[in-house]
Image (cartoon, rainbow, N blue to C red):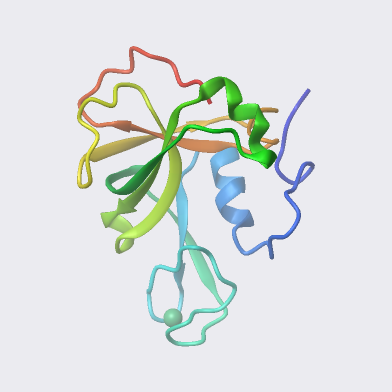
Length: 153
Ligand SMILES: [Zn+2]
């Protein structure tokens, strides 16, 4: 079965981040920037909070950043029972310097030995899957680690 986020859309969003998901489905990591003042606006909005412009430009970026914060999940949450087999797992909030420090969430894969705030990470885009509820996703791996372990996501 082919998965696309638009067919399995999670209810409740306003759709401002649709371009983010479309980009990931094409294997591109893109974030929005205001066409008026250049401010990065992530999480996505339809209108710039700084200058009021309605036009956003989605720019492709290298998926590179640093750990801003992270947490380890030890229990399965009701709406992500698919992740039960991965427990425990780490979710990282990654600051993207190239995007003005915008922070992007994703699961951390691979060796966690050097996991700490400020550690450099590299993103890896995974195709849409049933486990990810039809969405493509980005996972983070600590920089310098070899991709010897495959993501469980
Ligand atoms: Zn603006």
